Image (cartoon, rainbow over all chains, first blue to last red; front, side, top):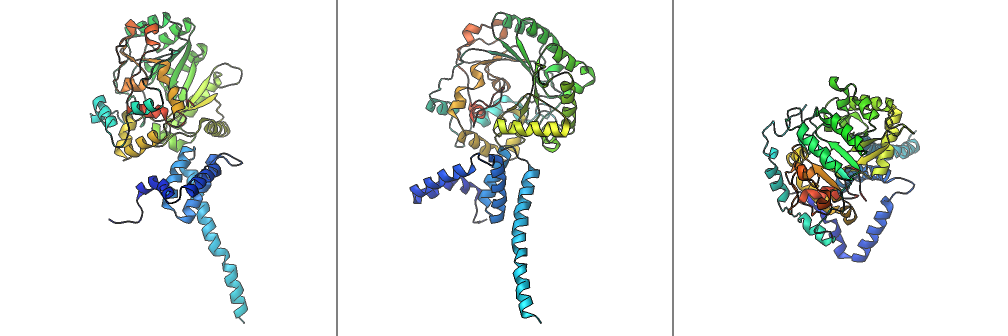
Length: 110
Length: 345
């Protein structure tokens, strides 16, 4: 069956660097710094990343950060809550634009 | 409760089949090649400080990740004669630590004798405990015995939640583990100033690497004390080795190749330099000598002309022996490394 996404492609991420080595290396350095322990722990950051991965619906990130969350000591309950955070944010982003809808309706209506 | 590989007549009950799978290329470089690149081949011991005795494969649990393939059906149990050979060998050395493991070592009829003899030789004794054994009818006084002999208890608890623990160790094991931990706490284990050391061991509940030890220890400490009133000294994280029932899980779940690749990608030369086989000698239930418990379970005795049986034990000859390795060794060198004392690097 043909498909756009192949799980094995996640392992080839670094090949993108062949198109521009300098930018890839800058991205790598930045990425590692973002996910290092800071004011937030590595575990907290992995859970945030998991939520964002679901919000942007990136299957590579969902794969990578599901594993990363487990390897940082998280569990299915925490990870499910992170997915719900993504869901609540995305749903809320739609819902809050309903205020604009109401503004338009109020302007047009008698 | 599940059954051992042996009782199910699984092909993986044979160590030759496990070694065949581990030896398949599948893009995995031979472990020795990685060690050569790290300047660590041939791998040699650096002086034995831990005399580890595996007193047998009998266990009251049948944990899904068990590299020993231990269970209630196993008959391999160290006899008194071999136990005496162990003490005789130990007495000829200055090896400071005795680490008693299994199966459930406490179920061996010679366990308490071994503890008392090792204590009499002024050695520090460690008991690798599955916790539920403390609640068995015949073991009601085990916690007192361990406390009175000041044995360090190293207890398996993969997670601070029931779902994960039971998934790995069997239904009801988490509740039993908490009861057992409370019992140990009552005898002073894990309490400040008591000197009675209670360490917990985390193994990941699946095909992934363990987290960093310190942050996970903080999580365990917070959750176990808050939810269950349980205290402990330290948490050790251990990587699941691709051996025994964990190998079965990896193979059956389609995780074998991905897990082995994960271990290889995470190879850490610093961890490799500190692997436990460099300072441990492992004695099997029948007295055969091994570089570590993992080699023991794969049936890989000491190689390169080393002494084979505890009756011939000579620490001088074994202190700098060359160590037998295979691809399962990637489990001990991944990330921060893994040993019987937790992460290495």
